[in-house]
Image (cartoon, rainbow, N blue to C red; front, side, top):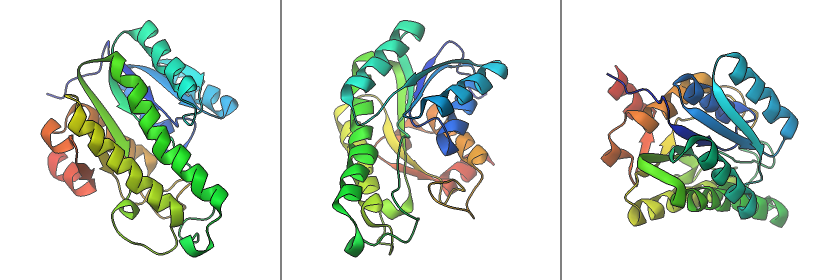
Length: 234
């Protein structure tokens, strides 16, 4: 039987749209008190209202994951409101440009720096600040993509930042008893990655599986992909 998340505390970053929004809905729907964050306060408040209207327990805190003091406030609030944090989804990310049309040969330094600060350093700050507040049997998941591991033209410093995010997850996995791993759902239909991918709702179910149901030894330091998910849930 799949364990519920009742009475657990979860933190989901980048929850104002796309995958993050649907992950927040899925985790709250599973019974966790879900603390969500993003930079855009108005969009975040809309997600908070939608989750609450659906019967979920949620707190929204405007947070910039590039700022460790913002993240520190986020996880301390989560701890005060719900107790030890059991689930962390370090989802916040940006893509400057059109997916597949930003080769490194034309990449601006500004875009490079912000991809690294948000998509890599933001993952580091989220996990690093959550560590003192993690409960027993906690899990940490970092959404990723194949561009982190395979050279694909046109993905520039976004791909570099996702590779760094995976390395950060592996490093924390090596240093912590808590399982930390990446989840690669393949292409997803979002504003960030464009049309033609998987529905973010189905991707959120995959992340939910990784958080509460996947083999922790497979998650820890690894990358779980769509095939792993489908094989486990058939």
